[in-house]
Image 1 (cartoon, one colour):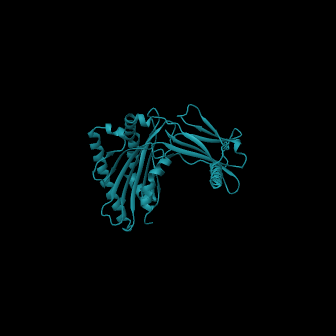
Image 2: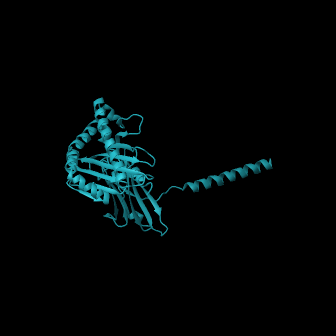
Image 3: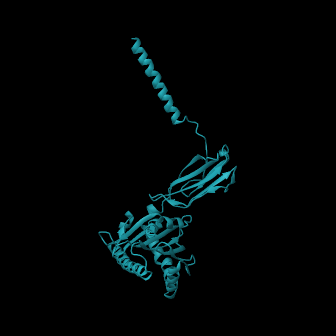
Length: 331
C-alpha cells in the first residue's frame, strides 16, 4: 500500500482521457487536481493541470519556483495579465483548501505517516461543434481507492468506499451537487469555448490518420491481423473489420483511443484469423480527416527478405574475394 496513492496520481491523466467518450467533432475541457503528501513531508504538494482534448494549456505547481498559473500552450499567451492574476488567485485558494483537507483526512482516518497520501479531482465538460453542452464529469479520489463520482445526469453521486460514503452525505447536505452542475454547465463551457477560440488553428484542425496492417503468427498457427491508425486528430475515429464483406466482430480486440503524446491520437483493432485466410479480411477506417473511408487488406510481401539479400551479398563478396586471391596467387 505504500506507493498506491502515488501510482494512482501518475496514472490519473491517462485513465481520465480513456474514460472521456469523444463524440464526432466534440471537444472536452478536463482539469486534474492532485494534493500529494509524501512520507516526512510537512506540507502537501498541490498540482493542477488543464487540458482541451489532449492538449495541455495551463498548469500550476505549489512547489514550483514561481507560484503562479503558467501557460502550457502558445495560444494561451494571448490572454492578458488580468486573466493570469485571476487564475492564480483561484488556484492558490484551492491549493490551500485541498492541502488542508488532505491533512485532515489523513489525521481523522489515522492513516500512517510513512505512506503516500493523495487527494485527486478530475472534472470537465464536453461541447458539440455548435458549442452546446453535451455532458459533464466530476470524480474525487482519496488515497487511490475511495471514489465519489457525479452521475451523468449531474443530479446525484456514486460513492465507493467507507470514507467516500461519509463525504457523499456531507456534500449532499451542503449542496455541492447543484454547485458542480452549475459550474459544469456554465463557467466550464465558457472556458472551453474561449480555448477553442484562442487555439482554433490547433484545436479545430483535422489530421488524417496514417494507417497500416501488421501480421503476427501465433504459436497455435492462427494469425493476428492488427489495423493501425496513428497521428490523427480529432480523436473520433472508427475502425472495423470485415470478413468476405460482412462486419466481423468475433475475436476482435478494440482498445480505447489513446493520446499519442504529441497532440494527436492513436488506435488499433485486431482480429485472429486462420492462417491462409488473411485475404478474406479487410479493415475499414472512418475519420473526418479522410476524403473518403479507407479499406486495407493484408498483402504478403513480394520483395526479397532483407536477410536473403544480406546472405546473397556475403556469398558474392566471398566469391569475388576468392577469385581475386587466386589471380594474385597465380600471378
